[in-house]
Every structure is written in structure tokens, then in C-alpha cells.
Image 1 (cartoon, protein in one colour):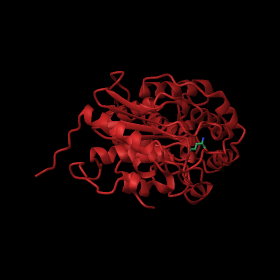
Image 2 (cartoon, protein in one colour):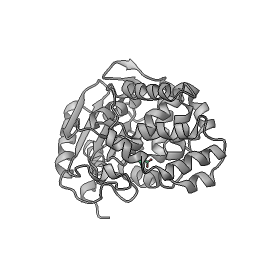
Image 3 (tube, helix red, strand yellow):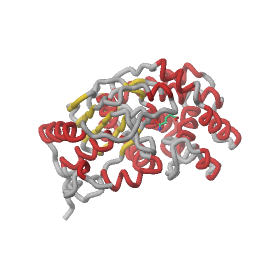
Image 4 (cartoon, helix red, strand yellow):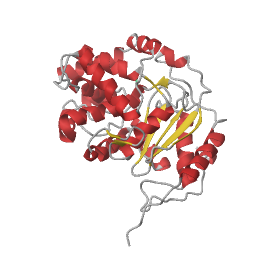
Length: 332
Ligand code: GLN
């Protein structure tokens, strides 16, 4: 007999979010990203969790409305945008959909797979995705499309954090190498410097855990934003973007993350994590201190706690999976 999906109520989610917030708020460990100086200056004690259900209910705890740098989570909306413009197969052919198993800014990954930058969710593929955005050749037109797409997915118009943009632009030497390597392999589809600048700008956008939860819910809801009640992208693209998030959302730690959490999620060095539970909800958490792979320590714990509390796992037949060991009690 086919297993039916576990139903969850808003009250259960609220209890899980509040419990996760209390359990994780005192956790220590990790440190703010410092290779982008602005990020090192953000208050490390900020911490928020938000869940958006598919009826548009948003349930939050802590600093869920605090604005922070979206960073690599911005790779998700721009991958969706490239799919909207070129189709799922177009993105597969021009960028790829494979995990690299290497850090997000790896040049080695690009040297090894020069025929394709692998996935729009690592730096090389994300810069390539920015180069694809229409109208090709028009930086400001492309920027308006990128921002408009994020606004449709989150229901809020994102603004650049000027100090973050300045800080990133002044320290983008590695990414500049990636953009020009892409050029030498014929794997960038607009001016490399312009494409890199668009990528840097999108990473410097401010967002909140609540906005990312709405984006996650839109993906979990086959492209229909449950807060704005708008179909943002074709339903057929939803499993494609979720598959990209699943394979590379935590870079070289993606396998460990999935094994422990049971939910596809994407991190950013600003401290945000966006999770997608298809057919159920979007979830996001934010806390600046990161582990050595650049993933927020507390955001990971918070999302795992919510999943644990609700007894959910995307890989279980009914999605129900009771695990004895609480994430916050785990020995490393
Ligand atoms: N802007 C950052 C970079 O390119 C994003 C990295 C991240 O969030 N993992 O290095």
C-alpha cells in the first residue's frame, strides 16, 4: 500500500519553530565570514527562524525580519530565472546540474569540468547564470530582471546593502578569475566583468529569514507564491530547482547535510539557509557564524531541530521519520 504523506498543522509547526528557537539560541561555534570584511562586522548573536506554509501562513521566531546579506542563496532565484528564460534543458546544456563536491568558489572544479561550470548553485555556474539573463548586453536591464524575479519569489522588493556590495567588489579576485576562465572555455554568455558585477550585486542584496521562507514555499508549491497568490514560474521547473538545491546546497558538505537533516537546503555566507520541503513548506534560518565550509552553524541546527520536532524527512516513504537523537544533543 502506498504510504500517504504526513499531514502537519500550523499549530504543530509553531510549536516546532518555538522549541527549535529555544534549543538552538544558546548554541556556540563557528565564526562570521571574514573574507568579505562587511560580513565580519555583523552582530554574531542575531538568530531567526521562519516557516511559510503552502496556505501562506508565516510562522517565525527571533530575528526573522532582520535584514542580512543574501549571498549564495541568491544563486537559487537566478537559477530559476535562467530556467524561466531558457527552459530546464537549456540550463542543463549551458550550465549543468552536477554537484562539484568542492568549495563554492573552487577554481579547481572549473578546471576539472571545463566543458561545463557544473551547476548554477556554485560561483562559476552562478556567474554563468547571470550572463544568461535577458536582455543580454544590457547590464541595467538584466539587473532589473534579476531583482524583479527575487521580488516575485519572496513577495518583497530586495535592496542592495551598499557597504556589502563595496566590500565584496573590493575583494572579488577569485571570482574574477572564475569569470575569465569561463570566458576562455566559452562558458559565459555575456561580458565577463558585467556578469561578475551582476553576481556580486545579487549576493549583496538584503533579505530576511521570512522572505527566504516565502521563496522556499514558492518552490515547495510548484512555483505558486502562497503569499502573493501568483504563479511565479512553471510548475515543471520546481523539481528541477529542488534537485539542484539537493545536490549542492551545502557545497562539499551537502551529503552530510542531507544525511543529517532530511531536507534540501541552500546556504549563504551571510548566515542564511533556505530549505524546501516540497508539498509542505519553505523554511529559512539566519545566524552569521559559519562552519569551515561556509554554512551557518545555528541555521543548520535550527532547521534540523524543526524537522526533528515535526518528525519529517523527505527521503522517508511517508516523509515521517522519528529519529532518537536530537540534533542539539548530537556528539560530533
Ligand atoms: N558572494 C560570495 C562569494 O562569491 C557568496 C559565497 C557564499 O555565500 N557561499 O564568495
